[in-house]
Every structure is written in C-alpha cells, then in structure tokens.
Length: 357
Ligand code: BGC
Image (cartoon, rainbow, N blue to C red; front, side, top):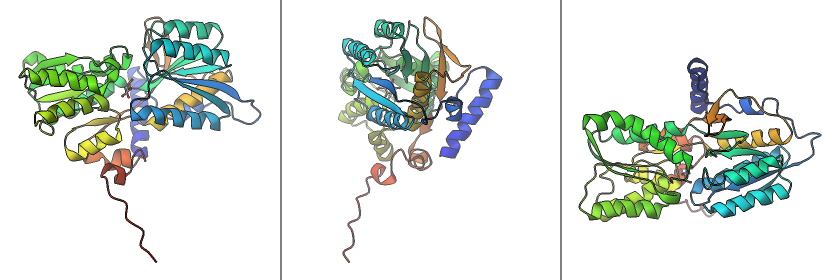
C-alpha cells in the first residue's frame, strides 16, 4: 500500500507540473532544507485541536507530537471541543507560553480569525491543519485533497446504485472541508441530477459533524414516509448516524452509504455490509508533513511549495496529500497493508488463547 500511495503521489505530482495544481505525498518535499535536531535548541510548537470526537484526531495529535519531538520540539496541546471562544483563548495562551508556531485544526474556519490575527501580530506563525482557516493571513495549509474525498464518496455509492432518490448528509457548515467534500460529491452527481436519473431528496449540513444530528436528519426524513435509494454521508461519524436511522426501518445494508476517515467501526461496517465506502486519509503522512513544516518554520526555514489556496484573504502556501477509496474489496491492500488498522481488529478475530506448555 505504501508503494501505491507513493505512486499515487508521484502521479499527482506529475499531474501538477502538467496541470498546474500540486498534490504532494513525498516527505522530502517538506523536509528538504529543514534543520536537523543537532545543535538546535528546542522550539515550542502549539497544537490546537478543534475536537476529539472522531477517532482520527487523537491519532493526529499523537503522531504530530511524536514527529515534532523527534525533530527537537516541545509540543503544547489543546482541544476546544468545537467551542470557538475556547479555541480562541487557547491560541492566546499558546502565544503567551512562547509557541513559535501554532498548528490549528479550526473549530470554525472563519470565526477564529481574530485570534489567528493577533497570534501572527505577535510574530507567531500559524499553520492550518486539515481544515483551512479563512479570511485572515496564515502561513501554511496542510491537508488532503478534500474535493477528491467527495468525488470518491459519490463514486463509491454510484458503483452500487446509479439512479433514484439520493440523500446528501454533509459535514459541519462551520468547516471549510464540508464545502470542499460536498463540491466533489456534487461534481460527480450533478450530471445525473440534471438528467433526472437522480433526485436529491435531502441536502443538509450536520452541525459539528455530530452523528446524532445526522441520525436525526435521516430519521425525520424517513418518519414522514420519505424513501431513499442511496446516501452520501460526508464522514464515517455521519454515516454511523444515518445507518442507525436506516436500521430502524430495516434498511441498513440495503441502501448504499458513504463516509470518510477509515475509522475502525466504519471498516467493520464495510465488512458487515451496512456501509459501502469510506475514504482513507493516511494520518501519519499529514501529521509528519505538518510537524516537519512547523519545526522548520519555528527555526526560520520556510519549505517551498508552488501550490496555493485562496482563503478569502490571501493565497496560502499549501501542501496536499492524496486520499484513497476503501471498500470491502480493498481493505487488505489499503488500510491493513498501511498498518492503519489490523486484520484482527477489522474482522474482529478473537485472540487465540496461548497454548499451555
Ligand atoms: C475532517 C474529517 C473529519 C471531520 C470531523 C473534517 O474537517 O477532514 O476527516 O471526519 O472534520 O472531525
């Protein structure tokens, strides 16, 4: 799988050069020129998480910390649990604790801008991690190709059902990624919506990506007698909520549902047949890239990228990684081969008792 990912990255990189947009998978692109630990005093890096609800974020935090510490940084971690004032004051605290760089998973892509602006005016560099921070100056943005994530989700569902009533259960309206993922899915569905093959019967965002909200949206629709042939759920958490509501009507496993994150429970649902597709975004890759970048920036080096993303205020230097579609068929040569989850975890193989000697 690693080989595949490198290859995908390489192909994307070539596509870039030809097509003008860049997706980087290679660690070298960021670490090239980054100072080594030897002879460098430790630097303080802040890591401000927006939420810890989904399984992925703890992994992001741990892997980021591990890599940054390897490079000689001290990492101070915060989590705001989607509370904007909390995240803003955490950013302020990180500045007063001497952070040279703050890596932020935005609790709200726009609302935290004033805290970012004041951190930067104190000379601190800000990196948007996974979610773009909008309408203010920032120093870098490290993420996956989120439009591609949405495309993969819609394609995964269309592989099973090509016509009928489709529901779109999106992410948080306060998260820029929710719009990018939706853009990707809609680019795939639009021709079929226009031709009348697909009828979009539900099109909703999900506040804070909360699975309970997704459940309520789906349940309310089904309760009024609404029928559905396929559901594009923006991530595995919302997919979980949707599948609960479908299950109550005896529809789980009969209606294809998408997701993203390759969470363990989602992979188990792929095996059980209640979820159709998830999207694997290698967390180790994004965590490493962001840590390399953060430590380099803290030491005054700005690794080069020609890719930028307009955030409403400026063109932000950007680093993108490549997502991979996962279905029941390719679990083994994607997430298992990459060491993200084990065969035993996914297929819930009971551990063999040790044979007494
Ligand atoms: C991330 C997803 C995640 C969602 C909810 C998005 O910004 O890209 O991976 O599932 O937030 O935390």
